[in-house]
Length: 73
Image 1 (cartoon, rainbow, N blue to C red):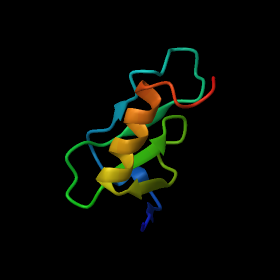
Image 2: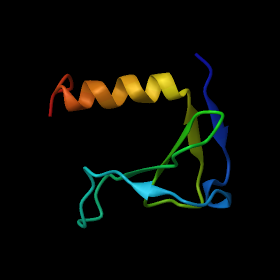
Image 3: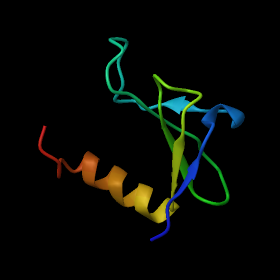
Image 4: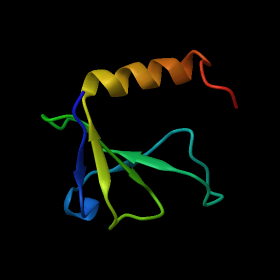
């Protein structure tokens, strides 16, 4: 599986915050939908920092595992 990084994630527009995020400035992820080369993911507290681009299939598997409670809280 190949992962890429995007050095300055702010160059991409249309980020959305994870529905699991809250307003307490905690650990929040943002994702960018409908990208042809994968799913970019960044830390919402660092919008000008890097983002990691993961294959869509890996992101889908991760989301499914989270929804199914496969990660300890």
